[in-house]
Image (cartoon, rainbow, N blue to C red; front, side):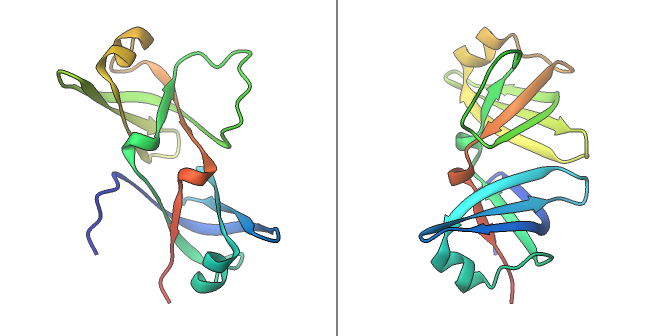
Length: 142
């Protein structure tokens, strides 16, 4: 299957917390990066999710925000992945920012060019990818 989501993280379910309508799924990648997704109980059942099951976490680049100074910042977003700017591709309106995480994975973010400039992003600078748990899609094979 080919998909348009730029961020594809393979990993295993390491925790599953169920509620009456939705569930919180923790996925850890082979490099040790941790993602939290919220999905419906129907999806948990349809995918047959359980701790230890291999899954794929998908995130559109447009759902990834970039932050450069997290000191004193409290967010409701469950996923804050620290990394280093590997590359910036600037367009007239938007910029693609590629962060390399400590575990080796890359996160692609599509942000406004003005936002990239305001953050002072450049190759080698530290930055954090911020992703809401509800923006992560979980996939599994049978």
